[in-house]
Amino acid sequence: MRTKLALFCLPLLSLLLSACGAEPPTATGEAVDAASAPIPVKVVVVTMFEIGEDSGDKAAEFQLWNERRSLDQVFEFGAHHDLHFDSENGVMVMVTGIGTAKSTASVMMLGMDPRFDLSKAYWLVAGIAGVDPEDASIGSAAWAEYLVDGDLAHEIDPREMPADWKYGYIARNTSKPFDENKPEPTGEMFRTNPELTEWAYQLTKDIELPDFESLDETRLLYTEHPNAQRAPFVLKGDHLAAMTFWHGKILNDWANDWVDYWSEGKGNFVTSAMEDTGTMQSLTWLTNAGRADRDRLMVLRTASNYTMPPPGVDAATNLLSENEGYAGLDASLESAYIVGSKVIDTLVAGWDVYRDRTPTVEDIAAP
Image 1 (cartoon, rainbow, N blue to C red):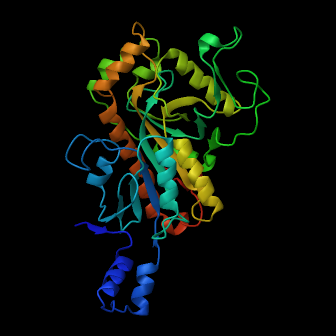
Image 2: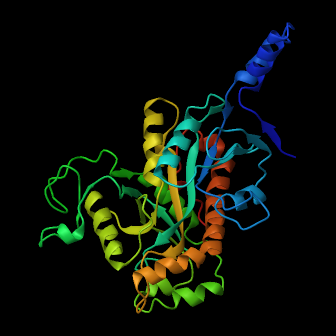
């Protein structure tokens, strides 16, 4: 049974009773303290969208968590979607809405919500993404260390760019593509806690992910990309977040170059979605405000589709075919739930330790 808790219901009740000339009931000190004490949260699962209902129909990122976890409380939330909470284990699942603006606003709104204590919370982004066929196959799960923003830049139409430019996209306050004299990133790139990301990867790298027969039809088309033809697997790979759903080999090359540029050659573009630099930006400012800890963010993106077409198919045809659905959607949702659950359950089971420090690979017991 789920309990739905409304925003500001007690103050509203007092106001209504006062307006009617009745005195509101007086709560004991203990009751007031219990009502006002923020609820400690151990893990926040950050999903971005749901297709229809929260259960019982075509699933998107939230539905499997809703159907398979004991989310017994629902908190009204004045953003895209109500908050669902497992009160026994301290696990919250949110749906931010699609795009950087919505993820930024939703995470900031949750972080400032006085009903919750998020000071020790871990944040797990668990969402689908496009994947570079050079690196992985649909259904695969990638842990990201570098989060690179694909929107903060200067741009001119490539038909008007100088002949010696590779792209019409350059970093702000620079004079050419991939200018070595770029400014320090102020939102263009974030780095997650590398030790925590490595722990999450090492903890989950041997998980056998579901391999649906339906995946073969798409992945076998990628004859020039061996990794794209593999059964789904867990890997480490970095993330590009941009509000435009882009597709094609040229833009895929740009994504690789852009991630390489902002990560100083340390990152490798693997997955593409829209929200994660916004999520990290909010967590960074919430950390400054003492409301959260950005070093407890993990980004797990699972591959629902490829970011470029297979040989012999043009980019427009391949992109428009995805309007009918992503070939790897169901597999990617399962992978996100399976891999993400391993991390969550480990954190909750070891909360006496992980409340006060983040885990490292040394905490993983030998098989």
